Length: 276
Length: 302
Image (cartoon, rainbow over all chains, first blue to last red; front, side, top):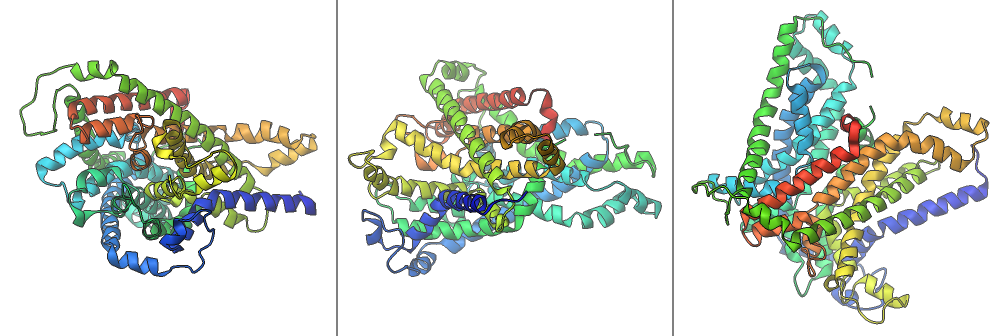
């Protein structure tokens, strides 16, 4: 359909206004990070700092343990994603290809585990981890995050494997592959994009956690993750909003970069199972 | 969808064998880190325990936690807050998500950029979103105070976080901003799977834009929207970080959801048994709600 000039103009206007409105909080975060404390305690507020304070980023990075927080978040995410992916790839493949007795019930159970409130599971996990001495250690997050990730990745991967034609394995087996080597040599290599997208999504899930980190790591400053660390910067009476904002940008950027890579897969991946 | 026959070219016994083997790690891990903790918390909910010490001897079985729960004003208040928050946030997310998806589903130059932009808040970690809104609604130099005074809606500074109604809305707005992009992403996927022939045919038949939306777009989106709705409800229902960091359930418990109540009973007052009971009830409500909402379409969740 062809639009008139006026119609396109209106469409562009609406798109730009909508984006500006929805992204304003992100813009405000950036402006705040670049403002001086004096500018931030002034009304009316300035919508762009007189002299952008890029130094705040360097200052925050040097004075706060942000590199450590980012490292801890990354380690916890790498650990929990690796653990979950190994388990989910195997289970997702089995659920997609074999009709195993009890497999369906297991799948349903894993699906129900998506509904588990973290605030419920955190209580017994706290007790268990205290008994085995994991409180304060990043290993507690690796395990706790796996409880968040596995229900998602198993079903995302099952959905992804469902889209790969079975003829591929069948012809591999005609050529003399065993079912196992058909999976390892044929299906997994061509699934790389789906596996990568799922792993990135799992990384985001782990990186975004706050409840478990707060419960298991609060008393162990050396293990603080980025999300836990930044909430300690938000003081009860005085908060240096420009420094908090600069730190927030450091923490948000890795996830936003992942999002830019992941966006095209998200649409397919998240909905893969939804429309049957 | 027709059932695809299971692999039939090699010996069936071996395939079954492999199918079981592949599930073993998942079964073991899920049993260890999900099922076992769940059993522990169910067990705790029937005991009067202050701190969860698994090596301590079991306390006597009691229903006291549940009795206390159902007669507690705080519990019913938390149910009401959770319900209010869920209904408000979910409906706003649906409207905004569907609206933005329809908008960027139009053909125009720069559409890919616009798609990235409207769903960007999805990529902002919840804690960071909370920091942003805590500053926008700051009681002294927050942008929203300036805006309200400027528009003549307030005479002086509003202390957003000490007024029960205001604090509730700050929490709701933060959650809406964080939650609508998910609906947008899902709805866009649904929109793109509608064949364009449908629209051409409807145009030939003389259907106007509203009719095309009402009779083609909406019905085709329904399966996706149904699942999305359940996922958003579950998210709001169980969310922890936004409320915890913004208000911690206050003021006067006006933002205390079931999740926050569970957490604070456990790690604020160390009533592990009581907290487990609240958590178990929350889980039952979650499962029941999703089953009710999905109805016979439970299968469409996977």
